[in-house]
Length: 143
Image (cartoon, rainbow, N blue to C red; front, side, top):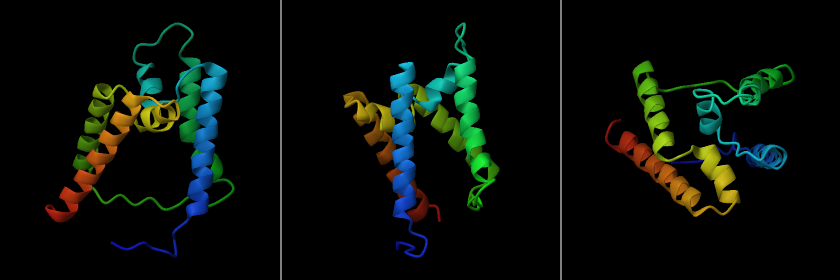
């Protein structure tokens, strides 16, 4: 494996990470809630009274932010090297995993680790290990 140094962009990645951290911090400070996407989306499945608007606004922002960015700069090309069946299976596995793990990568990896949560550390390590194993298996055995 080699690094594509021409397209390596640590500064934009750092800026994006800082913005995610700032947004997650502001969200917990201003709302007292964790910015875990699966929990926010899951809360719409059994909505509590007065709990729908902020969830829809948050999720709408996730969809609208790239579209707004596209007004000022070109969006990167999207390339997915998987078939529809693989994408559906992967999505279902991620959904099941977030239910069993009591959260997703944003909830545990960004918000939980910053709060020094042991549960989030274990969950994030499990996410990463599963990703490493999956890439290894797909690249070495299935390709």
